[in-house]
Length: 606
Image 1 (spheres, one colour):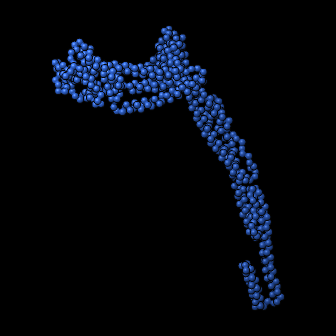
Image 2 (cartoon, rainbow, N blue to C red):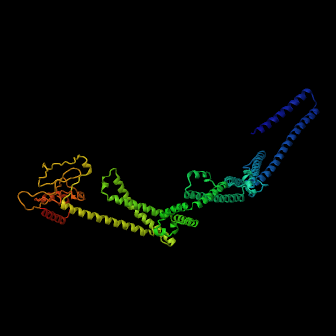
């Protein structure tokens, strides 16, 4: 049972008790029955009026609740429609009071959402208006009378964010362009003369309209100023180059050059004017020193001839170079020639640099070839020989590759220009082949000279013997005593000895003569083979004794002068033993030939 029902029953009990209490009071007082009836009617009326009034009030409350529900429901439906949300539906059965409360809560919530959306829309519209005015763009199209949906607000927010980014990028571009424009104007000493230029330079940055048209106009203005600046810089740089060229030609001293050093940088109007004045002064001075200037130009012309690998015929084609009539016309011819040579070198710079690289590599290759044929290189220490061999091997690989690369580039150039690429008056590859052919012929010539020299040396040694040479390093170990002789094989050397001779040598050492007298037992000539395979103490490799020392016209090989040959018997054994190492290198045919020559020589002397 509900508490309200319990309270109702308790109210009835209380009323019953109150009526009983009244009746008791009336009994004690002695009120008659008719008055009791009247008083009971009064009590009834009071109770009834009170209950009627309470019922009327509750009925009124019920009506107000029902009316409020209807109003809230209507407003809620409207708000849901404006906010583009689903309408509110009460779930399950509920009382009038709860329904009215829920509807009223929903209405307040939707009103708040509507207010927030309207406020945000207003803020976004204000921002859009401000940004569009700065960017000179049309406003965002949206109905301000209706409540925007969440999607519409989101799109509007994105649009405003895009406008902000556009504004920031254009502002940054504007600031950068403005700074460059101001620098260019300062460099050109240019004063803003149009309203747009004044707006850019003088007005507040925030007040400048960042429209695409204005940005494009700004860029155009900057390009114009940069073109003027570049032209000024080119003119000033040309004047400086002309000044430096005239300085070099006229041999202007450094002190006089430093006087105009302040205008050798920059491109402002005053700098350009000062440079022009200096050029005019130097041109006038050039006219006064015509011969000196022309000779300076000729030096530069010769340098470019060398850089362009001009042949003698090509150089002689410029007849003005050899003229002695130093006039202004001759100067103009030289100026035109040096300009032509500069342009020609710049057009073919890569090819000329490649040819120069080949020339340097070729000279280095020839140097390594020359060192390779030098026997003294084996005495070098410190790893130089190994380094040279590595460089030589590397160069032998890179030089043909460089030639092939140049050949391909030159062929491509000749196809493009429909003419031959000439180096020193001939095609480059013909020039390269000529260099290789000259190198080959030089090697053949050197080889023939060596063979002829070795042949003559061999014949001389076979006839007169050879002087063993001790290496310089060993020669310093044993000090020599000039004017003295040393005993050999414990035999005292004297003028009376008939089977030996003394040879003067620069080191003071006396060597055994290659000839000796015959043994006492016979007068027959005995030829003894010396190819036993054992090296004699003084044996050296073939080619070591390439030269015979001569002193006062006599051969220092152990033989006697032709003026007074003593008559005595000789043995071939000593000669053969001296040349055992040489005989080992010769072929069998040369051995027999050498032996017959020695035999004939010995018979003649005996």
